[in-house]
Image 1 (cartoon, protein in one colour):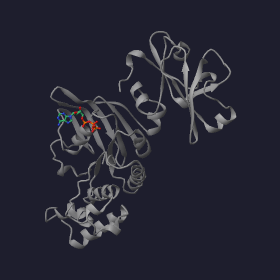
Image 2 (cartoon, rainbow, N blue to C red; image 1 turned 45 degrees about the vertical axis):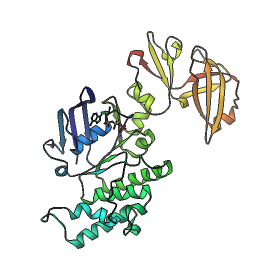
Image 3 (tube, helix red, strand yellow; image 1 turned 180 degrees about the vertical axis):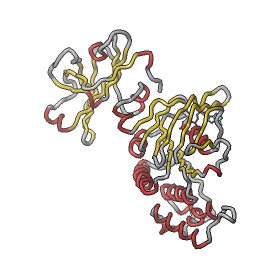
Image 4 (tube, rainbow, N blue to C red; image 1 turned 90 degrees about the vertical axis):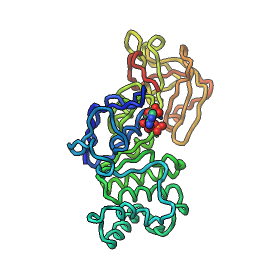
Amino acid sequence: MSITIENLNKRFGDHIALSNINLEVNSGELLALLGPSGCGKTTLLRIIGGLDVADSGSLLFHGENVEERDARERNVGFVFQHYALFRHMTVFENVAFGLRVKPKKERHPEAEIRRRVTHLLELVQLDWIADRCPSQLSGGQRQRIALARALAVEPKILLLDEPFGALDAKVRKELRRWLRHLHDELHVTSIFVTHDQEEALEVADRVVVMNHGKIEQVGTPDEVYATPATPFVYQFIGNVNLFHSRIHSAWTQQHGDAVAYVRPHDIDISHTRHDDASLAGEIKLIRAIGAVVRAEVAVAGSEELVEIELSRERFEAQPLANGDQVFIRPRQVRVFEESVKGTL
Ligand SMILES: Nc1ncnc2c1ncn2[C@@H]1O[C@H](COP(=O)(O)OP(=O)(O)OP(=O)(O)O)[C@@H](O)[C@H]1O
């Protein structure tokens, strides 16, 4: 089921929550809505699901306008951050719930309900705890059950709002991989909201980066990381150093007010000067973190330290130490006019 959103707007009083949103979600795609708190991700998800209404614009499922359809009629499954499982029901009954409350003429016979629920519990690898109550499960297990429950009614679209937000980092990572794997088996068009860039890049087919109610960029994880469309995307996804043209014109390569954006791993560092683009600096801090070595370098004219990342191999071929006088040089730079600087 594809989703088309055209010129969608939403206000809460004076506050513009969504401003002219245009987005095409392909059938069977796993899409992430990524952005800082308050940027409008949840509002957009709720409008797609029929839990909220837009002020203007259109929303189509597979080419059909669905604005008049309520949440139930849209055939959408939801998973929220705080597992909304029924505490007094077993895991099995929680998953079966949506199937049991269907109108009589649509309801499957009991044997079919049991077959479906068992299959879903196997899919989320929790068939062995079917008789437990939610209070006897870990947070990660509860979210997997919440997902099985959402899938039970065979939704055409699955909407997940920070599904792993309340879990600790290790469980989050496990569940991310697991969600990707599950999606590859089921191919239900899925949209998940997250403010965690790593989660979005690791799990999604495409990422929608949002800021202040607007879409800044839509692209594959690689596209939004390697070729950010705006200064905001540059800063929000991954670390970046900023160099202003009035001080470092060799890096911005243009007149006027401009800012060069350079990723920490796109900067060479050495004890010798290469050319005019080399900036002199002093290493203030150097640390090896696993396979990566991180250096912070003070350069003339900049108050902020420049962050540089190099591989351990590179570092071992050319040892560097605190206090060393060095030259830094960008391998890849992206220049934006100062006036379009992004706000976080
Ligand atoms: N029912 C409401 N009434 C008034 N303002 C609202 C309402 N719902 C959301 N907002 C405001 O709209 C903006 C967008 O909210 P939304 O929940 O969509 O953001 P978000 O990107 O999902 O943020 P978070 O990651 O914190 O959940 C926020 O400034 C929020 O305060």
